[in-house]
Length: 358
Image 1 (cartoon, rainbow, N blue to C red):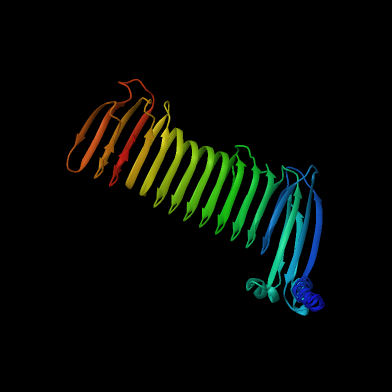
Image 2 (cartoon, one colour):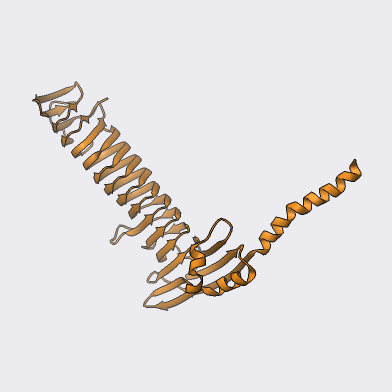
């Protein structure tokens, strides 16, 4: 039995190893590398598609780029032709270093019609000082950032962004992330503008965020301030100090808003689980939107609320005047105290309910 098993094992091993060998032989590649001296006055522009941009920081006043072009599972002559047709083109003028992936017309069709077996990838590694300013444009690939403090513009389509630390000052213009049909995950940032379309964005920690978003899921952890213009989105954050939104067909869920909540919304929902004592203002102007903003039972605040074809629910511990007819309900007065607080709740809505207590 042992004698018969040995040839079978040898044959099985050969069968298993053949695809690995063929796969390795079917990958062709071409490499590019170049470096430049840099400074805080210089902007680096990179334009790529069908591959990743990987940004890595170092302690040199120098930019170094390493690019690898991969062609997989094409006949050898075709692979060689594709590699010849894809080049990294660079230029430098007016304090701008430009790095661009150029694909010859002969191979654009092959690059654009990749499938599960045939693949063409152009991957970059960019070594840079943390202060470097960038203009990054990438399609059909990811962008990975270790650390960045230079004001930048990041445009990404059909790919994912992952960033650990993006720390910028508050001077304008802000760094801008423009992402479509992808995902963005940022561990920490400061001042950032995000244009988000058909994407998911998660930011764990930030100072100030500006969102212009459509058909997206926007989430995060502890954020100081958010200003948003939104359509057909879902916003979900753990804690925000100041939250301002103008939206249609969007939903907002926040664990805590500690200072200001300003929402002008149509056809959506607002759910804030906690507003602590000492908040500054809750201002809601809504249509076809239900709002549940739970203000802490120990808070003292002035309320001025009106709902047309809707209801207003406040704590029993309230010194208020309530008026109600078949169409409109209004509540004015003080909640949690007789008077004297600087906290204000100012709301008006049509075709929606307001609730400020559980």
